[in-house]
Length: 259
Image 1 (tube, helix red, strand yellow):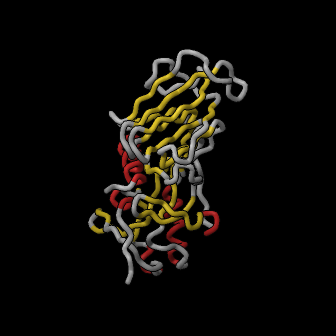
Image 2 (cartoon, helix red, strand yellow):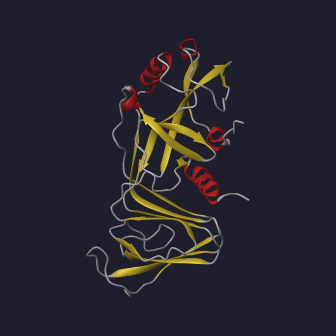
Image 3 (cartoon, helix red, strand yellow):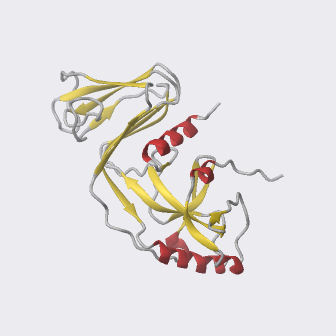
């Protein structure tokens, strides 16, 4: 049976072409370094801690990331102000999200900014120096792009027939609902037994739930050879490796247990 977090990260990758953090409120930054196995990224260190410089591109235009598991989530908005205003915004609407299936996702994030490392060639050179000095493990992955959200709601169900009600302003309604707009305030009261595997609600924003990464991989005839786990690469191997994008196969490969 597929774990909830594996289903969530798979749907995020299929829909957005980004890797997703679990839990969704995990904070990542450009230059974070860790390992990626079994649908999880586990931070270990950073480029700054290893003394490897990098440059970041300016944030691009703000965008909205919206997704609901197809055929498994129903969203509705009350047309009347039945609840108190949120964060000084009045009137408020009642947004109802109903999960008809377990392991389903409701993801809505607005005013998102995308930042990425701009000079990957320079980064690769810096990593090679770190490899030669035996400070870079061959299974390391470096975060080269992050999506930082504005106000956001991320809900993942752990069981079917789960309903969540949120207070929202009239300016914030998911794209699938006709009213449309941007978030200016959210509020909710959810029981721990609400049937949710993940519940992230942030009016202020600042989440980094989506990212891309790169790893140093040995190439042969232009094709990557994936290595599940190894010790620190000797200096002789540094020049044989190239900085390549993290693949879905690498991200989902299960860790190898050593006996």
